[in-house]
Length: 511
Ligand SMILES: *[C@@H]1O[C@H](CO)[C@@H](O)[C@H](O)[C@H]1NC(C)=O
Ligand SMILES: *[C@@H]1O[C@H](CO)[C@@H](O)[C@H](O)[C@H]1NC(C)=O
Ligand SMILES: *[C@@H]1O[C@H](CO)[C@@H](O)[C@H](O)[C@H]1NC(C)=O
Ligand SMILES: *[C@@H]1O[C@H](CO)[C@@H](O)[C@H](O)[C@H]1NC(C)=O
Ligand SMILES: *[C@@H]1O[C@H](CO)[C@@H](O)[C@H](O)[C@H]1NC(C)=O
Ligand SMILES: *[C@@H]1O[C@H](CO)[C@@H](O)[C@H](O)[C@H]1NC(C)=O
Ligand SMILES: *[C@@H]1O[C@H](CO)[C@@H](O)[C@H](O)[C@H]1NC(C)=O
Ligand SMILES: *[C@@H]1O[C@H](CO)[C@@H](O)[C@H](O)[C@H]1NC(C)=O
Ligand SMILES: *[C@@H]1O[C@H](CO)[C@@H](O)[C@H](O)[C@H]1NC(C)=O
Figure 1: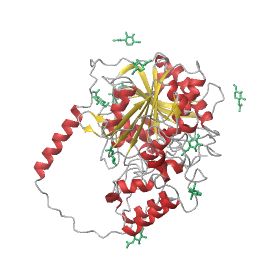
Figure 2: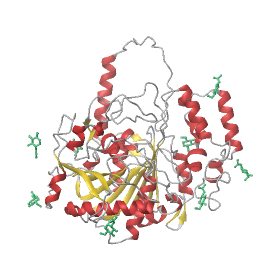
Figure 3: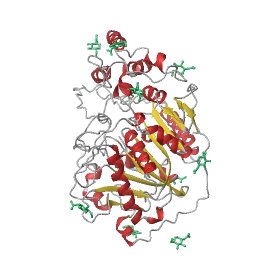
Figure 4: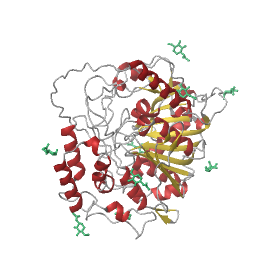
């Protein structure tokens, strides 16, 4: 059983005295000019694959489609036209008595996007809404933490192709019905059932090339959904090409959180700013728990001695070895705004229209954006549902009975896919990139275990930026690490996310 990756940690933000805040504005105009220049550079390099800007002509012949149509000029607080889109609820099967429905929002491609492809996106949790992804990561308009109002997202994945955001599994967001899934195969069967219903209404999308994407716990969902599709050929009228997973949950907590935790603190020692006594204590725990030196000894390229051992007897931290939580508690003492999803955040905690800016629930806006009546009305969402970014109920009522994906289905999926992209933000503490390297070196696909040659520094070159992390491809698997990015890569490093999707979809030759 896997643990949950979204934590609601109650901030114990102490009472801060208001210190004098009238800092001098040094050469303000000059600084501003440099920022404007940088922004221009950033945006001018975003679309290396240029196509003729032909308007897209997606119309749906099934009259049922029209009941899902969303007028792009009517989205509350959005003062520009987001273009045509379709959203609403559809059942997970064609049974007349089906009570379980998933909520979706579908966007056709923008002027530069492809009509031959379809991207599916899901957030993780389990139980977190994909509307977060749409609004704050890769959708055509964004209203992210701290933003005063929605803005156009230049890095919208609709610039690549059609995109389908789905709130799944049952129990998530606006979805309807009582959750009853026992494991990831059940989840995949329900999602594929939903997609069949979706393709009945939007049948013009049949036989498109499909790319499954998501982040966090979707590192479990997405490989299992792909595996299900490969194991049931002919069930889904879409042509699965590949998957893209960001900061994915792939294996045991002890591997992706505990073993690399102290190394992570050392890499960012000036961000954590722990005192020396505490650093010494961390070293002592890491040594006693067999975390120290684990990477140097076992994570070699190629792996030296077969499968990689666990540090102790358990797939969770041994007693006294939960160094990840020890670090989290200490980090919160020093920095009450410490954000496990992006460690650079400091006080104050940003305002968020979805009420979840990082590790903190916050109550500065009620109702949340997707819980507003006018928003629900505009997107055909059920008015009776109280929308939450992450579900209060367990979407796996008795837990997720599946093994982690890297220890089960992921190798098969990589072998069947044309391409597989795993991308990881280096400033993410909830799932740590070095742990993902351990997972990869312990995985056998296409006849060999792990990467055979080392991951080179500065090998991920982002257009208009230069080196922004590492990139490594072997036997159909591409692994990317992104400097400065937290857990939600499309939110924190939209250009890196966009470019890696272009690669996955064959719109560029290198990641
Ligand atoms: C747009 O699609 C409709 C329906 O499929 C079709 O009749 C029409 O010719 C298309 N227009 C263009 C410009 O491709
Ligand atoms: C969308 O809404 C605007 C403003 O209400 C209206 O002028 C326009 O005709 C609508 N467009 C469609 C395609 O319904
Ligand atoms: C719903 O319908 C399906 C087939 O149409 C049937 O197999 C199933 O037993 C029905 N479920 C309930 C709860 O009535
Ligand atoms: C990318 O998408 C945004 C949002 O839909 C749009 O404003 C922009 O024109 C698109 N850019 C390109 C190059 O298609
Ligand atoms: C490596 O893979 C094996 C086989 O799946 C598994 O038993 C073992 O726990 C894994 N080791 C780590 C460190 O995850
Ligand atoms: C560390 O590894 C040693 C040798 O394999 C083992 O005996 C010990 O139980 C491990 N310690 C912990 C805390 O897992
Ligand atoms: C050092 O950090 C630890 C962990 O947060 C804390 O318990 C201890 O009080 C700190 N010591 C000093 C001198 O700040
Ligand atoms: C698979 O990827 C290769 C290399 O990127 C590409 O040339 C080929 O067209 C892809 N195949 C399909 C079916 O998309
Ligand atoms: C790669 O970078 C890491 C730190 O980010 C450093 O520890 C390591 O020595 C570098 N590797 C090489 C081969 O330079």
